[in-house]
Length: 214
Image (cartoon, rainbow, N blue to C red; front, side, top):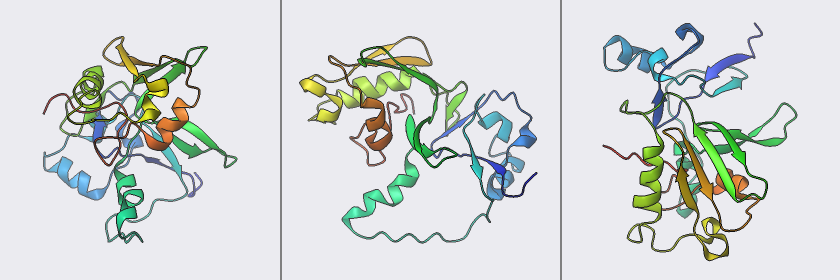
């Protein structure tokens, strides 16, 4: 194997998973996580990953630990450190030609109807929160009903998510599949999600998910 083509698993800050079809040895983890597994404080890596986890083709694997210094100071810090906290439903990545393309984040798939008024997403199978609780569309419903549409938390809905003045609507199909609907065609919605996500009320701008249980 070319040393510059290591396959490194992509760790979701707030999410981990289960139900793996590939052997556990195919995945790597930080030494401090291995220590936690050995101490019985964390499930084995094959119990934390989804059926089809996101991976990146890294040029090389560096050293774990140390101090990471980032050149951000002041009001603009939101564009710096908080980016490390974000895991969106879709994100921009570069393909083999260096072209920016939309890539699924914590979803298995997505689809758009013919007039771009409905966007359907399917969560990764086996997705879990960091405490081990399954991630389901109950968390999507909680985000929509208790956060996004709650005037005490979101007094003014960003026009980005209410084209024509009508807020997006949510339809739950099953425990992993949900559809976002708009009153008019919205051809740029996926691109907006990858750029801005769903905004308020938190700085890390999650897409559609807030834990429904604590």
